Image 1 (cartoon, rainbow, N blue to C red):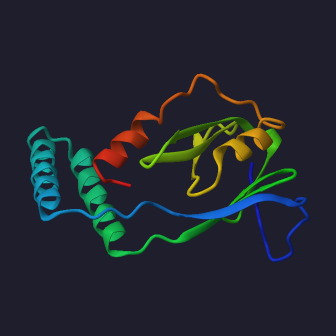
Image 2: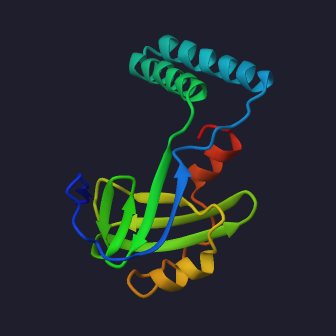
Length: 168
């Protein structure tokens, strides 16, 4: 399990690379996007009540509230660091031994992301935007400690759909 960092931080070794990224990408959404999303949301809620699937209706309403709140707030900056013994994402430290694999999807300007697969059953992967960092240097360093997943050649479908639909 990742360890929470406190004010009495343990020495994790020298910082090899560090940068920060936004918690989520804030999209400029047109009024057309809001109209289409509202119509789709209302249609799904109506379907949920017609089919007596009230839990689905509640999920759609909660999803809509989350999208609304996300749109009204600015995303926070999350610090990221690759250190000699692992990685630090925000206030979470992951030892290299906790990382199953990593892969880089680099297709600028849309996609510049470093992914980590986790051994933890409850967490599937970490998504770290690269920003202006040279992916070759990061790749070269990480490949010394973590297995590279050569089968991943494109961003995950959920990330692609979220980006295309401007959901995250």
